[in-house]
Length: 222
Image (cartoon, rainbow, N blue to C red; front, side):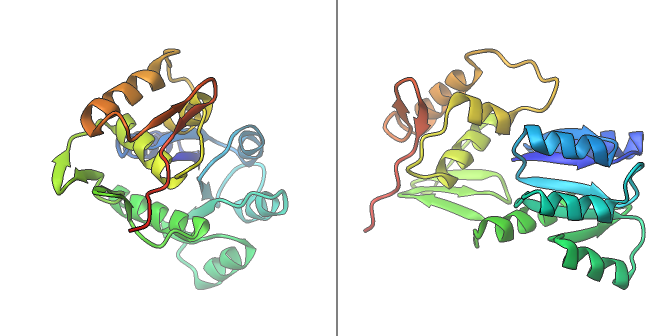
């Protein structure tokens, strides 16, 4: 998914961004609440990692503004203070979860997945389409019980199309979920990834809707 990371510590911010990108996410990193509000107005984020100690505006105030302005995605609050009162206030203000610094990147990734499941109403870590199974947590794909090796970008495209089964996603929508600010994106990058997915999973799985985008039709009920 595309994640907005708010963190004013340069070393922690960069390390977190790299770790989440290695896990397959597109991550935009800002260092103030003001920049976070601007980013949310311009882009769609599946999750926001919100540091409570931001300059300019307290993270708890920023959380309230985000929810008041209609942001409905997952918000994971990052704090250096493990205080019950603070966690209660944050949850009441619209946070989905908390994580205390210093944190383990694997735990952070798991909490992001959990928060996003709750935000989207998805209850499972697996997406199933016929004999195709995508394991979100372990980033594995099997087809007919056999493993299929995918790159991170291929996995993410497949996940997006399965999560939006029956809905056509444009190239621009896919790119926004695949790439962070500053990434160099070739104009045919998505098309190339789709081509590789079809070679690995069969040509009929992903349907091209001319001049609109790509779609995986909903699986037929047995």
